[in-house]
Structure formats: C-alpha cells, structure tokens
Length: 194
Image 1 (cartoon, rainbow, N blue to C red):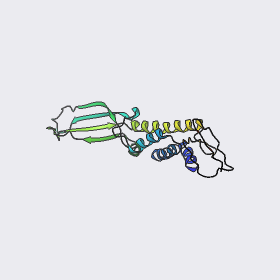
Image 2: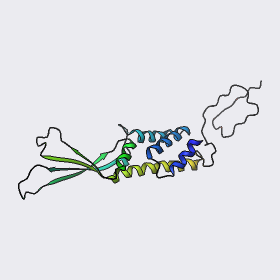
Image 3: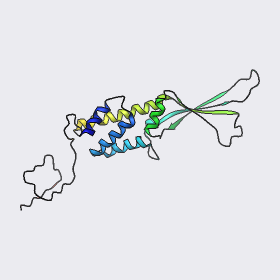
Image 4: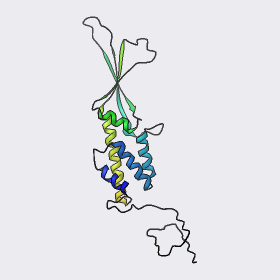
C-alpha cells in the first residue's frame, strides 16, 4: 500500500513536518488495527484535554516579576524568579510553530485585581529546549512503533500487504478455486456443497 510505503519513507526523514508524520502514522495505525497508537497520534495532533498528560509534556516554566516604575537615583531594582511545572496541552502544530521561532517562549501577563497593576511587570518563560524535547520524544515514539510493527510483520518494506487480523469472514456464494492463507485460531468454517 502506498500509504504504508510513504509513512515508512517519511518517518526516516528528519525534515518531515511532525504534524504530517503524526497524521500518516495515525492513518497507518488505523489501517492495520493498532487503535491505541492511533489514539496517541490523535491526541498529539489535536492536543490534550482532561486526559492523562504524558510526562514529556510537563515542562519547567519560569515566572519573573519586577518593579517597572521610576526609581529614585541609585535605588536597586529587584526581580523575583520562580520556577514551576507547566503542562503543555497544545496540539503538535502549536508546539512546532513555537519551536520554529528558535527562541525561548516569553509572554508578559497581568495579575487580575492587582492593586499594584502598572507598577510591576510579570513574564512567563518556557525554554526553547522544552518544546524541542516534546518534538524529539514524539518523533522517537513514532519510529519505535514503526520499527516494532516492521519486526512483528504488520508493516512490510517489500511492498507486500501487512499481516492483518480479520475476526469474521462471511462468504455467501461459491468459493470454488479459492484458498485462505493464514491462521484460523478460535475460528470455524462451514462449507455446504451445492
């Protein structure tokens, strides 16, 4: 199948955009019946809601605050910095777009109902490497899955059809000259000669 061949080739290229690779992997996983992996791909593509968030999507966020109004001459300016764990639930496209900017993610914010509003500045910082690690882990997980599927024979490099599990076969009509290749564990077949 061309879909599988394209996926195998694209997964080996580091320049394949990760959202595109996730979409290919999701499609292939659905075709070969690997629905748990397809679900993983969908979550990475669409972002995480209230689902359990994978560990690699917890990153460090630094929050800085400092006095930003005029100071008396020779007065010292102080800044506070606090680090905390932050959940990145965004779709992979957002993660990749931030990563493409090749700089730390920084966002100024105001504290609601702050009586000192306007006197202080507050900023959140998430280091660029945090987004790059997410991309690296997801790309690695896709390739590990692909390699396991190749090893298990569910994907093939030679263009042959992958081994697929078929649970029920109903044939209505003649089966003269036909054959079935594969295991029929826990299966039964009945043939009525007509």
